[in-house]
Amino acid sequence: MRRRLAAMALIAAGCSPVNPVPAPATNQPSQSAGLAASPSPPAARLLKRLPVAGITALAPSAGGVWYARSDGTHGWIGQIDSDGREAEQRVGPRPIAIATGGGSVYVAEAAGDDSTAARQNLVERIDPGSFKVLASASVGSPTDLTVLGNSVWVVTSGGDALALSASDLRTRGSVSLQGSGPAHIASAGKMLWVVNAKTEPAGYLLEQIDPVRVQQERTIPVEGGGTIAALAGGSLVWLATLGPVAGSGLLRSVDPDGSMSTPVLIGAPAGLVETDNRVWWASVDGRLGALDVRSLTTYSQVPVGTSGSALTVSSGLVWMAGDDLVLLQPSP
Image 1: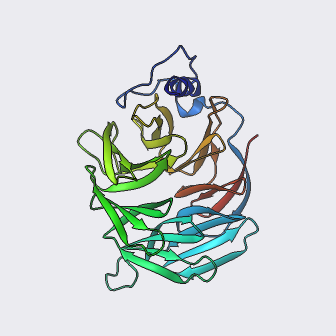
Image 2 (image 1 turned 90 degrees about the vertical axis):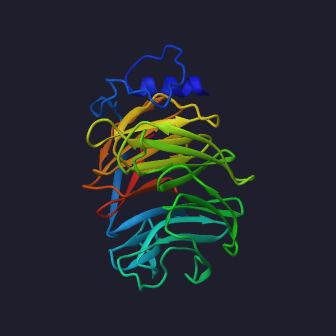
């Protein structure tokens, strides 16, 4: 698998595979892996725009997506389908992550500008039909969450990963991480992965957690700098960080043993998701790109808007948030 992924990255960069070995985290991308080198066809075709602004997070739902959004003072969560039919409910001032599992919706609510406002620094379990809060837990300052089995895992800016019961959100365990300001968490295989988004002395830190034993397994330094990173889980975990050129990013796959593939140069990541043998990325400057794991090729990036903030795939469509909510049909 590691040989194949390294070959995949070289082909995506416009090079021929020559039985490569997985590159360490410090490898630089190929000089030919520039953004202009992406082959056709385009990653997707734009279908429509829905006027939903301020989206901070997306999650799949039947026939559409769940979203969290904020205007800086007030926050909402909502569900919308591809025809624009929408249901929405006020929450705390700054919902920053949303996930689904076991028939419930889970929302991470960070602190807003008004310290007296309700529903801050919480994780909430919400009924998807009535929007009623079924359970709530204070977690410090959350930055992301994911649902794995009967647990909700949340990471905080204080450097903790918390395992909460999916039913009543009681704390089952916690892991103190080495990274500064954990930002994103994803599951891949039987493991959880966390990447910090604050600059460490040597770049980013990618940390692996065993969710059964509730303990950290390994910490992997990754070159880079800045405050942007993204994770996507599947059979492997995919990591996107800021790249060496302004506006660029680096995409790598990570094996369960921590081995990384050669990085592929992409746009500065705003969102990342793996589905149907493709890895999709949204860039902060409003472009959508994809890498096809089966054919070992990348697709041409599609200009979608002037910014990107979140990304998911649901009901066979790509949903990308930025200035508005954009629906795209993946290329065959």
